[in-house]
Image 1 (tube, rainbow, N blue to C red):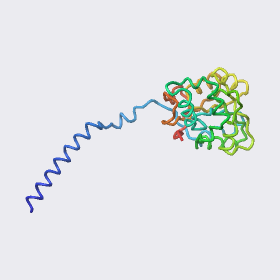
Image 2 (cartoon, rainbow, N blue to C red):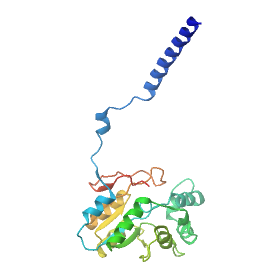
Image 3 (cartoon, one colour):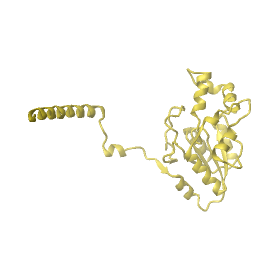
Image 4 (tube, rainbow, N blue to C red):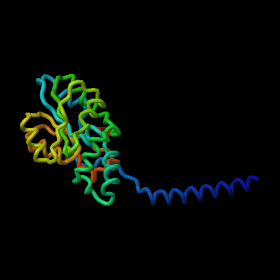
Length: 229
């Protein structure tokens, strides 16, 4: 019985050794130095943003909508499958924009918790908040304003601004003298910088349908940590 046990133990040790070798080939691992050798990013928390505004008078601030305030990929996935499954041509179709706005597709968009914290913070400060999107409004009106107002419990809210282009977004930021603009896309950060205001990045969820992923911190902007949700 002792010999049998010893033989079985030896076989298990050999199998374990072989498994370890196989795993090491599949998972090469990473050193601490390699892990820390990432691009420098100016990480901030919502609390740090709030602290940076201490003593400042109420101001106008702006938020991008898709992937910043709302996880709206369900609406865009719906539109792609319905209007142009093999391409992104649906984004240039008035029928798509009219469809998602008049049929209130954004009732299925998920409010981002980081946006809730930021909106609550700016509301408590008495700041004026604008929601500025690169979406096209469509010919049938819009329900996005109501969806955001309901999702975040905003009592008094400006109508969502539909710019349909980065150039129009920059112009709006300048004309309304905004001080901060929150966004997920590189184009959002570029728009804020072009307008001469403070850009703050909210990270896009990895499973967003909006690809490719943006480069967080690319422009030296502040990036809110743990802001994908």
